[in-house]
Every structure is written in structure tokens, then in C-alpha cells.
Length: 258
Image (cartoon, rainbow, N blue to C red; front, top):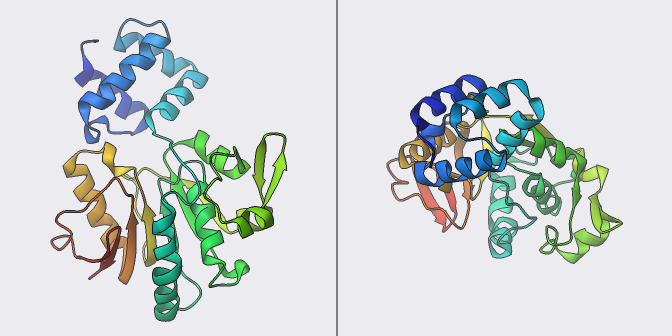
């Protein structure tokens, strides 16, 4: 719709360090154009000027760019594999102090699900999850830990009763779960990765990236994993060349560092 997207991408990188070249162009441009139109602006230059001077509009833009569709225990059958097979194996191999990274964690549903799921295998106070996202606003929501009914629909009943308190129409997650997660801002394309991870969870995020960007991220995940550590990806994703990237396929969405 608007012209000058190449220049716009450079401006945005200068402002946010978010590299729009890594995202599928048609999809991303369409979303951005919609947002700009919503703000009653007719070109990219004006929009860049707006987000430079208006912090609220800047936050709105970053929030809009990052795709936040999240829910607890998304695809429950995969969480059963995690519970019955992956966690017991990891605990047996590496002991109870597992280093787990929830990458692109959005509003916290995933890292909090990981704490609950792992609590069946490890004492709660021994669990530590690093949870990262590029978007400050979703990290604030994650720390708040307030969710709607739809978000927590797949949470096992025992955990719903034990760890959620109803506040109006929403549900607040218990502090004892919150305490086990450390939230940090992180850009998968430019920031350095944690090392020595036993499990990395990054689900339904990389579908928005180009093939080159995906491959680079999967390589970096492999470097961040300890030998025989596991990468857990989303049901919308696949790693076709996993052998070249030094993974072994354990289950359809679980890959072990070779």
C-alpha cells in the first residue's frame, strides 16, 4: 500500500534493533500498513517520526510487531510427552537443577506451564525457568500473571485448583509459580543466547521468520543446548534439515542435540 518499505526497515532497525528483513515480507508489510492506517497516517516517514516522539505509539508498534497468541498447555498432547518422557529423561541424565529457557515466551503462559509440569518431577523451589521476549509490554503482562478463562482452559484440573485464584472474570497465577520464572527482554536475532541449557522451548514463533533467519536461530539454539539437551518446537513448525543442524529427532516436536 505505501512505498519506501526498504527505507522504513532501516529506520525501524535504527530505532528498535528489530530486523524486519528476517520476517516474511508480504505478511509483515500488510500488518504494518494496517497499523499505520489505523493511526491516520499516510506514509512511512510520518509514522517513523510519530513513534520517535510518542513513547506510547512506539510501545504500540513493538507490541503489534510481536505476535502474541498464547495459552497454557497449548497442544496438551505434546505436554503429555514432555511430562511422561522428556522430563523424566532429563532429570535422570542431568539431575534436578535443570536449566530451562522459554524463548519468545509472550505473556508467560508457556514458562508458567513449564513450572507446573516440571513440579511433578522436581520440588517447586528447585525449578528455575529463564523466560525471554522482545516485547516489554508482554513481559509486563507475564509478570502480572493475570489470564482469561480461555488462556487457562487446558491447564490440568489439579493445577487450576491449586495455583489459580479467580479475580472477577480473570484468573491470577500463584506467587509460588511466578517466583520460579525470571523474565528478561531478548531479541532472538541479535542478542547473545544463554549457554548450557538442558531444555529450550520455542513454539509457534519462527513461522513468522524467513528460512534463513529460522536456520540461524535453530543453529544458535543448538549451540545453547548442552549435549543431549532438548529443543521443543511448536505444532506449526518443522525442522526439515535437523540432521545438518546437529539434532536428532526424538518425537515429532522434540529434537535432541546430537
